[in-house]
Structure formats: structure tokens, C-alpha cells
View 1 (cartoon, helix red, strand yellow):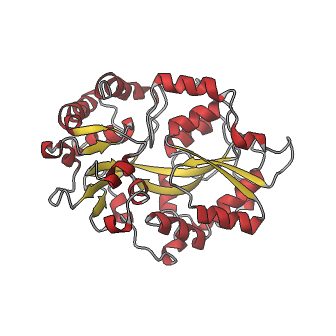
View 2 (tube, rainbow, N blue to C red):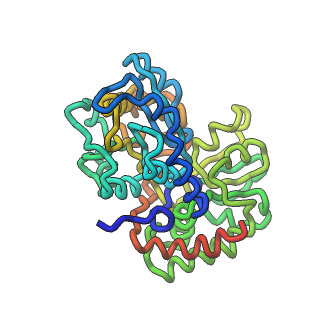
View 3 (cartoon, rainbow, N blue to C red):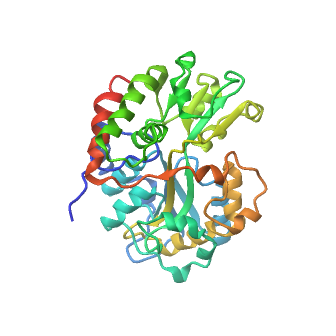
Length: 368
């Protein structure tokens, strides 16, 4: 099959978008840096008592990892990434020695096609029945969970500091408000920002229509971008917590992990009625993982209702993937599962991704 180039033909998912130069540098450096995981990896053909996880920032509570360690008498080594691109590039370069990764759906599709995952052994998992069939229906890239097990179904939204912005419309149009100029940020994420503009204009987040993509470009470049401090996926929550930013596009966990308890009363997070791009992040065992059996145990552990409820309660998420966990939860989520019904999963755009690259990197991101 045709190999998808790393630098310019892979879908852009959640998190920080890397420029070609940064990605290339990462490939060169990672070839010689294997990290703590590789140093402690077991010899080929043996199973160690260490599970090496590579996961999104703000995504698996420490308490959950510690419970797994105590229950199974093992150590969990946990590295974080802020974008699908950086994860994919590092794995492609052979870095890390990881067992388990958490890619978004478009990257699950790519990595399955490229033979980067081990098959999931369903005989080792007792909690797959807890997964919502409606979520599985959305995973057209792997509906039988042959290579991936859904972890979380969610979406980015908008956080507003209501002490500074008491009156606002729950819409992506908020980024067009010139009175909030230099107090707002959007994600440094092509598919997220382009997707928001597309749905605001009444189109699909996966549009391949050049005219629709051009219209989204014009909306972002001419109406939204002039009001933004920057495109930021690295630390928008910190800027929101400090009061530098009053309105940000981002993920609920980015915001609520940074703000104080006192700030929560003046913070609103919502997914606009127009909808927007959604994601399903999944747990996948990397090809040749030294600790595949332990990775299966972790996947099954996550989908115990009490553990899944603890994970979603910690981040203020609805229990979107695990049905029994919904009855165990004790914390009201910051946004509801019903809000997600308006969203649309990002597809692997294939060669048509170049239409997005052209307007994003050649115009929108230039000079930011």
C-alpha cells in the first residue's frame, strides 16, 4: 500500500500542530533517544512488570494508574503527548519502547493500515460488554475492536470567563467579536479550527468541497484570526487560569485542570449548538509490545465501571463510552453527552487533506 508521508499528508487531530521543520527534527532526534521506557524494557519474548504507556496530556488520572499498580503489583511508566502528530512521528521513528497508545480515530485508521498495532485478544477482556454500541457504530475504521478499544468519545468546545464576558452567544461566532480582541485563543489544530468554521457555515467537518473549504478559510482568516492572541494547543488553560485569556477554544480538561475552585463559578464550558469536530480516542497495543498481556489487563481495568467512573469524574466528563459507569458516577460533568450528539467525527481525509494544508499553512497560520 502507499505509505502516507509523515510531514504533510496525515490528518491533523487533537492537540498542537507541528510545522514540517519541527517534525523533521523530532524524527532525527528520536532515533537516538529512546526514553526511560526503552531502558527498562524486558528482553525479547519476556514479560516485565512494567507497563509503558504513551498518552495524551491530562487524560489518565494518577489515582487510576496507582490503583492498577497496586492491584497487579506492577509499575506504570507514563509519557504524554499533545498531538496525534507527535505521537505518530515518535512511534514511526521507533522511539519510546511503549506498549499502549491512545490515538484518535483518524490515526487509528492510519496506524491499522500501516500494521502498527497488535490484534486485541478479546478472550483476555471481560469488560468489553460495558462499551456503548452507539459509540462502536461510530468507529467504522474498527467496529469489531480488532485493533482498538474505545477510551473516550468527546469534543472540544469553548470556555468563557463570565466575570469578564458576562454576555455572549453560545456559538463559534464569539471569535468574531472585536470587543474581545487580544483576549481569545483557538487551538493550534487545523482540523479542529477548520471544522468549527465549516459547521458554523452549515457544512460538514469532513468537507472535501473546495468552495466550502475556501469559505471556511475566509471566515477564520478574515473574521476570527484578527481577534486572537494566537493559535495555542500547548497551554491555553494556563492562560485562561491566569486571566490573560477570557475566551478559549479547547478541551474541558485543559481548563478545569488549571483553574482554581474559586474560578469555577465564573467559568462556563460548552459545545456550540452548531456542533463541531468530535473524537474517539482508543487504547491500542503497539506492534511488538513487550508487555502485551499487561496492556490487555490495563484496557480491561479501565472499563471496569468503578474505574471508568473515577476517570470521568476526575475530569468532569460524561461517561460516554462505558454504560454501567453512568450509574456509578458521583460528579456532574462539565458538558453533557447530549451536547456531543451535535458533533461529527473527523474522518481520515486521505489525499484531500492537501486542500486543508494549503489554506491552513499557507495563509491562516502564516504570521501567527
